[in-house]
Length: 331
Length: 272
Image 1 (cartoon, rainbow over the protein chains, first blue to last red):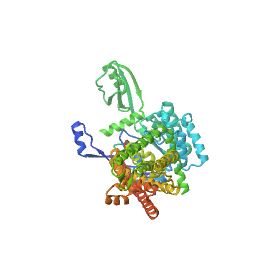
Image 2 (image 1 turned 90 degrees about the vertical axis):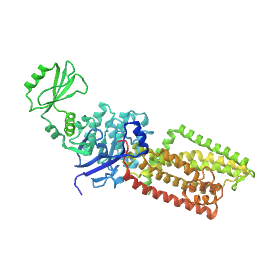
Image 3 (image 1 turned 90 degrees about the horizontal axis):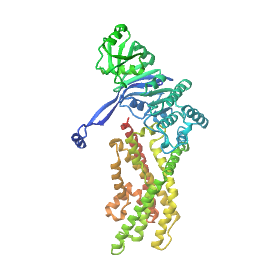
């Protein structure tokens, strides 16, 4: 028995997948030959989470985030390792366990497609046996926080994606869960809506002490809500620690965005790593360590050797830090 | 028990509302089935008219016609889409959304389907039974409707529906292994249709085959209720066949539970 709320020990999950073929000829052959490849979606992950923590789970596509959350929410059974949450084993005590958690998978729907959100909430009220007064309070509170009231009586098929996702969030909260798992739960929501969601999550964490784990590809989501980050890649945990210590570790890192008069092939400067800009073909990103370079020399050399039009120095953003961690791992 | 059932009431309601939302689809579906029923009526009429003594394997033409319409009524009452629904949920991964609810997976399907079944039965049972009785009256010249027989028929149809439902659920779990069930489902429907007497009365088959099929669960699906309605099973025989049905209900219910706990270990939710 463990005093921590969530206790995950060395879990792994392996998937079978049909081998993919590049050529038509090979695809034809694949009809007759069943060739399978195995992939370790989750490969020996361990962590512990205390009550009331807000944890961001990040990683590139296919890193194993969703599979991890599915194991935590009792949907998948890990091939190896142990999961122990709130004194229960999620897949063995599934019915008892899932009554205490709320789950949103951004690209799956638990809300009934043909009915209105309010109908679905009514169904959930019975399923979770929510007392009438708590149901009424929760409904009012969450619909208000997430702005669901305006479309609560419209059939779900007539809602936009962002509206649907917000309605889904209410589904996950209506029974006052102890733990919340959110997988890409802000997908398709506009900027104002996202801010609403983040505010709602922060409030729930603060006032209700709700424990949360969530994944997102929008780093702003993570940056504005989580205190702790777990970064996974290829099924393995590559970072687990507080957001501030991650910042500190990279606080001497700087990024300079330089725009040139005309496109440049390569920038040669000492201690500087150069990458292409995502959105401007004329720009480059220069990465360097604050303490390694002499600014005077570096800037002089840059100005002398290259046709610089504009430049800006930035402190590392979470997005950059994550990219750095992925990049280091690749090497 | 009552408290337990209460959790599933909203699923019944959701099933009813679903049917109501897609009424036009429902109407076309039923119309299509009725058309199919008339096709087999004309087919069998032609067969009987070309036979020498107007009787085949103990069936007279009026009996055969009543059989066709009763078979249609029974199929409407007992059909179950569980296989297809489970297959789809496994294929597109939406099964995970059902698993995060503190409810039994099989039971949610059962009660949701009961919802649209109740709608269908409420709307169709009176016109369909009246239709069958009119046909019976026209061909035999006397009113044969018997309320006790009808109630026994209804009970037998409920058993048949439960057998069908749990059988389909069991079959649906194959999707955990082969991922996509459409083809296998078509094949199953054909085989079950034949073995349960939907297409040809079991009495038309060789004696040995008939004997075997009567014990197998398939006859308990369509054939037993129809035979009861037609008054072919009475007294001890009737009780025996009802008992057999109940046995199959229990068997497939147990099997579905067993398969579920085995299959869930196999789950590898598709689509992220």
